[in-house]
Image 1 (cartoon, helix red, strand yellow):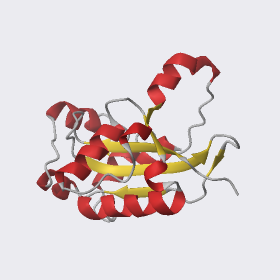
Image 2 (cartoon, helix red, strand yellow):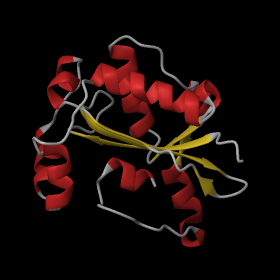
Image 3 (cartoon, one colour):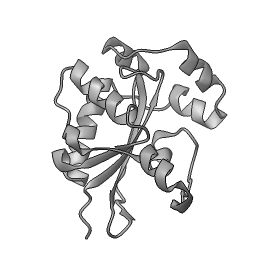
Image 4 (spheres, one colour):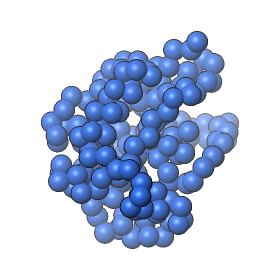
Length: 169
């Protein structure tokens, strides 16, 4: 069985700064050598009120942007019948998943932008305050790889665009 040391992270947020209010966290663990993705992914919808109460920031431009996205993407973060976890519980759940499914603090966590997913999630841990479950030197930027090798990278999109788990996959 492969050892999953790499994690692709994707967040859905109501802002675009380092303290953006998080509404969903998606992640998959993967092995670079075998190109295998763990069958046990991570996905949680976050209660927006709890994210704002914990210091998360919403901005009008991002809210307007969300209003222009597909009905499926909007419903994923707004439907009342879908479970939402308080931010503190979502962060604890992610910490547990990272330790159980990947390499915990030694996991290399990839975000789509050097200043987006990883930074926002790290700041959420810091604001609560909680220890971030991966080491800062293991932050990785997928956008940099895409920019450098984009024509050689095949992306298989499954699921709804702007759904945190589908985007992480």
